Image (cartoon, rainbow over all chains, first blue to last red; front, side, top):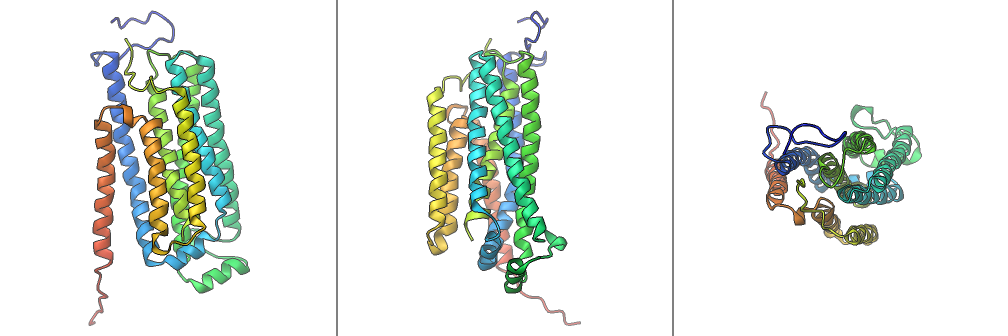
Length: 224
Length: 102
């Protein structure tokens, strides 16, 4: 295997790897190691949420009433579809179909955008009602004030809500950036049945972001 | 020289079937939340979410078709969270109110 670039855009494995296969496996192993740290980071918040949910079930129930489960369900569907198109983009790259790889990557990117637009409207609504995290919590309007009068620690629910969805939303934004990078490289014709490692690793990250939302949706929007 | 290729033989149709299963489970979790199972509400919601997570991990992230080491890596993170939960619960539910004598 030569390390001299013959074809423009064709990938050759770095010299410190025995083979392209070894390079691919090392990249994937590194990505999974990173995903483990991501799960531990989000996991701390989940553990906190579950423990305080057990301690104050009525207060969490009152808090979740201010969330629109229809928007949460819509965003769940959007992310699930984006996970499918991400997987399909890799499938088509493996089958040397550049046009379909690009189409699926663009759909994934657009789905990420739709998710963030819905989040923007949800956040605007909460900010308007003063249902903000920590010291910023300042409920406005009859409904929010009544809930606060009934549960003096209602602010804790919105601290969890904003921290968890905020961290998740920032991951969606990072994921969208990575997908845009994959789109640029696909346009350049860098991916094929011989090399698709970046798509694979970005895909794993994107699926993890979807996975976290799969747990956030029922915990924040549905139960309480 | 092909890079890896463990996953290149998942048929296209399988990916669409997984999406359909995930969408059905989303409907199930919304429907289940409308019924009050009392203390089981959280467990049922987490159970359905875990079934969805299994589908995403197994097929979209193709853990089912990969080297077993990736299941082990994923498992270590979940094990770490179980430990964190266990010791946090031990701490929080065994706290005694301290009253300063000063």
